[in-house]
Image (cartoon, rainbow, N blue to C red; front, top):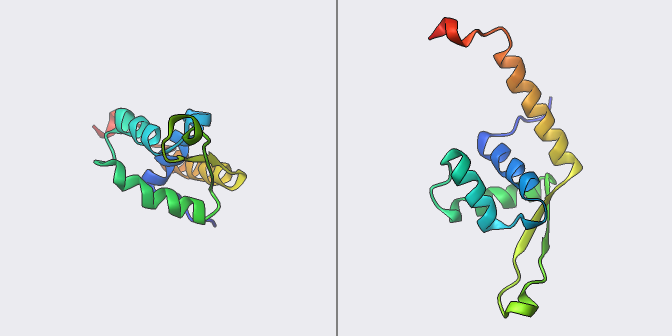
Length: 107
């Protein structure tokens, strides 16, 4: 069985999917922060993004905005097929664990 994603890995992959072509560090951080309150600083996402890229769950490329704005090129991310499969497996595991639990009955 493949390793299940951590919560933060799921958040990063889902943010990349939601942001489509605008998936670089700052918008990824903002999407996760506004939705979950996770990641206290933007610096906290760089290492997990690199690990996801190293594992083949994300691919990265440099954006071309630098030439027009005189800024440093931004590293953009796309989810890979392996990333989509990992998300699907993680979701299936979560749903399996929740199956049979009646939330109202345990409160």
